[in-house]
Each structure stands twice: as C-alpha cells, then as structure tokens.
Length: 73
Image (cartoon, rainbow, N blue to C red; front, side, top):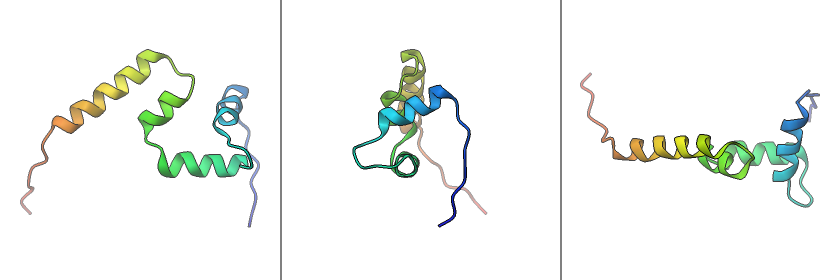
C-alpha cells in the first residue's frame, strides 16, 4: 500500500487524536469518520462552536421536512 505524507495544523491533529480509538492508526480514524459519520455527528464530536453545530442541525431538520418531487424527463 502506498503512503502519503500530509501536513495538517496542530488543531486538526488534536481533533483527529481525540477521535482516535485504542489500536487505531490516524489513517483508520480518517477512513472511519469519512465513511460512517455524518457531518452533524462529526461537528458534535469535535470542538466546534455550539452555534455551528446548532446551525447544521437546523439545516438537517429543514431538509427532512422538504418533500422530494418527481422530475419529468
């Protein structure tokens, strides 16, 4: 498997480190959060301003109320 070197901020490193479970590599963490975690779950699990999490949650609720419509081709 090929490896790449990434440069991330200390803040990003600390956010990943908080999400890292015992025995997981940072690659494992990145794959886990990008495959299975919704944006809302990620924001709630990280240290973002509560206002941002509240706004994202509101958008999710509004999206649930919008009914999809049929598109004629």
